[in-house]
Amino acid sequence: MPGGTGYMVQSVGAQEQAKALDRAAEGVGGIRAAVADPVCYAVDVFGGGDSGAAYTGFAAAWQSETSTLQGALSELAGKVRTSTAGYQSADQGVVADLSAAAAGEHRPFG
Image (cartoon, rainbow, N blue to C red; front, side, top):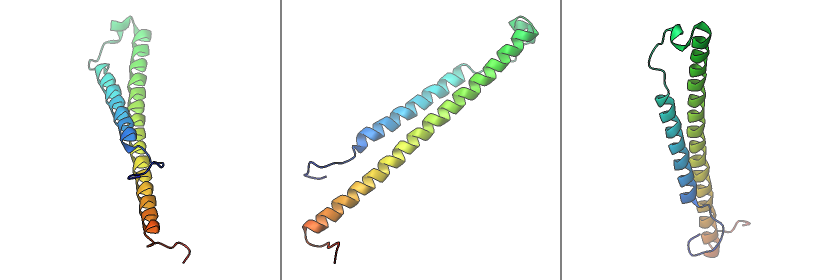
């Protein structure tokens, strides 16, 4: 509240948290890209049919999990931003109503 000591959401801090979540999502995306399997290996490169299939399954699962994690972090960052905007809007509404009431412009009960 301008000039006051009341409760207000610290939107700068919340925005910093959203940015940190975005950076984490980018980091996971970088990891996913770094461990992407750009080469198609012959099954015997990993020691035979069983280990080749195991590697292929592991690589596919890893790509899927990192994609899911990256999406979840990005979604969470968006939700932090949405919540922050909602709190800011509510804070502004309260400040406006209290200012109007203090000036005698707002009479909630008639």
